[in-house]
Image 1 (spheres, rainbow, N blue to C red):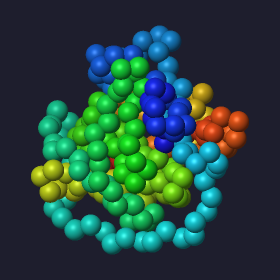
Image 2: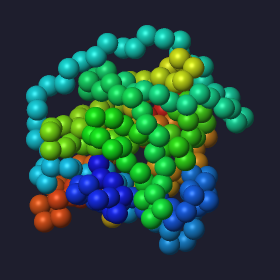
Image 3: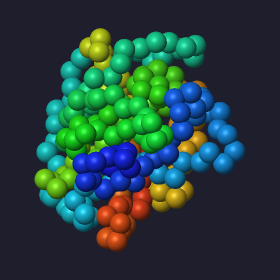
Length: 225
């Protein structure tokens, strides 16, 4: 996953142009898309300068224990902020940091490949709407938090623990790969009538010339009723 193109850390960059300013962020999340304001891909890519390589089978994690949050009502409902993410089938257990947008209009990305981030301009996990969580695929030190995201399949469970101790439990409905030039803005950020989740990283063909992946991998999930 890559950061702001102004990042001085030396990492590769491939910014997601979510919006040009914070006011526009709300419009985008609410589905008020202006003509020509398309998104070309998420700012998540390799930090290695080479494509990701297989690292063996994932370590399966136990299903987290806790009070399962009830499904939200159709009317707006405030829920606690997310604090961690657990995906047992691919060995993901990570805290969640807050992601916003940079002054240049790019989606912020986690400062380290070891954690994922929740985009605060999206719905809180378990509330009506699409919640967006992004993470790196790899780094110079090895696989990133979402290295195995592409291995999820329909029915895989995703658990988001929230600040009040409750668990929002999601079931994966599909895993798709899109060229960054054809990023599905409306499907990811547009309004939805139910509580849904989008997990995003990079994938597909690796471009050695630019040091970027050419695609985004997106796992779509819905709250378990």
